[in-house]
Length: 365
Ligand code: UD1
Image 1 (spheres, helix red, strand yellow):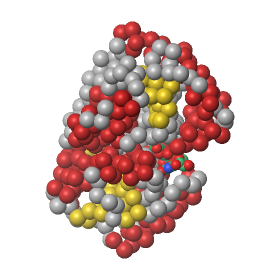
Image 2 (tube, rainbow, N blue to C red; image 1 turned 90 degrees about the vertical axis):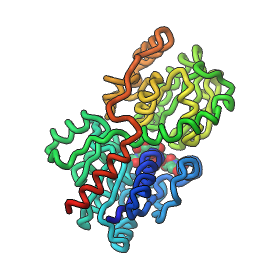
Image 3 (cartoon, rainbow, N blue to C red; image 1 turned 60 degrees about the vertical axis):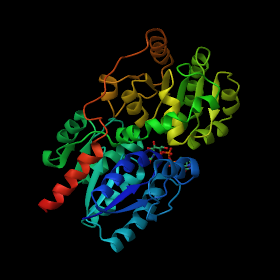
Image 4 (cartoon, rainbow, N blue to C red; image 1 turned 30 degrees about the vertical axis):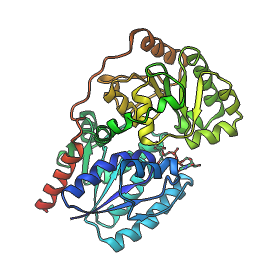
């Protein structure tokens, strides 16, 4: 069996790594294709170096563009790869544009598609990732899920049960593989904060950072939080560009408790959040990483495709309403926040389960 594994953007790299390792161990014939959706040292290369992911066999070098142009470029270039490499299967992870684009190409060429992290739904179609999730799942032949609610979503959408496999979370596999190495980084020292006495902030969703009023309102809330707890803020390139464009960068820099930084590498960032008092984020994956490590998380979004982090984990879904954020913040500061438990199968063995199923499937064909 020949598998093409796809990566494109930052949140894909840690999800593919345990799978590439396990496929190697099981001697699966595999190629790694990087679409080039993310391309610079901080957003891409540093992840390959730290995770020890082999250099991509092929890089499509599509770069940044509008959704339509980026998706179309990935499709045009990836079709050529499929035509010359003749894979039996294309494996995609997560919900970025590369995930949906490569699934569509493979399906139209009659190549099976496996989707890792299938079935998550925010039910918010204004999120580009929700569209990518819907498109990918309707096309995929094998759907690997991280939680039982994702299975239920897929069944409700009419996906046959035999295609769905609850396997756990490869991002948590990756976290477990790297946590000890991450702990050696002592990233907090770089920002002159003490373990347990700072917050970590990430912010990059278009809904939060693409409009000046919304971004300014969020900064107003951060101004209140930083009076009580320093905030370390590695700034995503989308957000950095918008802060400049809207003339808000100075406002943020003038807050004494906000420490702005370049995007951090995987290990540096893991070390930073695992020692933090709490995390404020609009990311998807960080909701899961904090739930696993039982770090309180305040999610600055109106919805989440990862509800298990709220029902079982340490996540507070506050939206960006100031009062709600401050209520959650006060609860965490005064009482420590939710206790939380680690969700089922988030045990470091998801990649093993996935590759086992792929090999069984091949035997049946
Ligand atoms: C993408 C994903 C999002 C994911 C996020 C993580 C989609 C639809 N969105 O959003 O799901 O959470 O990645 O980062 O796939 N840029 C750089 N260097 C890079 C890449 C981008 O400077 O290596 C800059 C470019 O100016 C670009 C902007 O960041 O225009 C946004 O990048 P883009 O890939 O369009 O979207 P993200 O917001 O990163």
